[in-house]
Amino acid sequence: MTDMPLLQADSSISCAISGPATQCANRDAIYLDYAATTPVDPAVARTMNDFLTVDGAFGNPASATHAFGHAASEAVGSARQEVASLLFSQPEEIIWTSGATEAINLALKGAALARQECGDHIVTSALEHRAVLDSTAWLETQGFATTHVKPDGTGTITAENLSKALRPSTIVVSLMHVNNETGTVTDIAALEPLVRQCGALLHVDAVQGAARLSMEDIAAADMISISAHKMYGPKGVGALRVRGRLRAELVPQIHGGGQELGLRSGTLPTHQIAGMGHAARLVRQRRTTDAKHVRALDRRLCAHVDRIEGVEVNGDRQHRVPGILSVSFAGVEAEALMVALGGVAISSGSACTSAEIEPSHVLLALGYDTDRALSSVRFSFGRFTTAREIDRAGQLVRKTVTALRRIGR
Image (cartoon, rainbow, N blue to C red; front, side, top):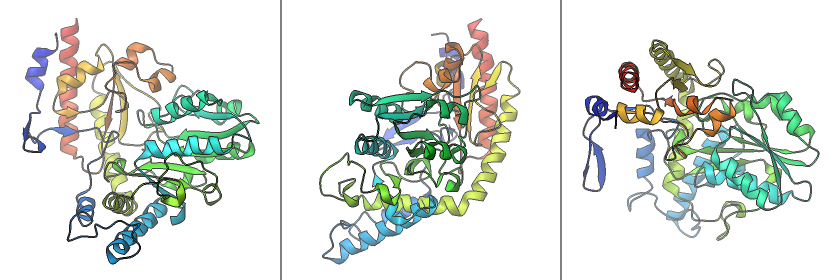
């Protein structure tokens, strides 16, 4: 392989397995893949630990006959309030799930199946996460039809394009608030009236926006999906915000003990829910501080990227959230760049599809050709990223891109 000498020279990460845990031997490794998952905030981890062992509130929150269950139930209730506050909602509107993927499945399948007598048409965009695209594809096997709104050249879903997609038979519209690959922001507040006019329900995938933007602009949506591990909380827990009138309508996708008003059966994981609640509170408390920090890092990284020839920013450079930057390096394959960088953790697109070496469906939807899509990588960073890490990563990327281009000649 032509990139092996470069890999040996520039690789800076070395991990060794010791006991049950994998620990990185080189602490100089740089994590710039926050859009895939964020580190759990240490304060959140400490909170979670309080609900795990015999000394903590480890009881089943559904056990109403003893103090152990009561303590766990109170923790779940407090976390529900914190997530509701994050989403400008009421606590009773929060339904716990195993993550955003399940929340999206419940929202789309639950709403479509409940409203199929009103229509059979679903609208989403070509930019959505696979959880949305695959859920609507399954609904098509059940007799529903889906229209995928195309973005404009900047990756924006416009009111004009959405209007063309809506029909009298449209029952659900699902749109992403912040794109997970390009960081482009969809103006949900401007599009929501169009959805209302046709009588459809609006679902918003707010996974990437929850830790980066105020949720007030999307609060009018009927359903909102979020995930804890994208906002400095634990993996394995998420939530679906469901407007009051809808809770009685959604068709459950998991059946069992009838938890979560019958919409999502299963014993609630108190430690994860408590962690998500604490993470939500920290997001609200640190919103201004985190945003200022990430904006400064974003400017710093863009300055490094702009020094490299043959670089194009994917999506709308201006109308995106700081902290998610997708760029294409002409003449350099993304996979080769990621391997050669070694100690800098970045992504070639959505983490859920990065195991497949194929062009990003998001970048292709923007009208980019296959070569540009395959030469694109995503940098994403957040609360715990340092300026030193950004500078070091920027220098390594420039050096590595130059070396790979030289090898490829």
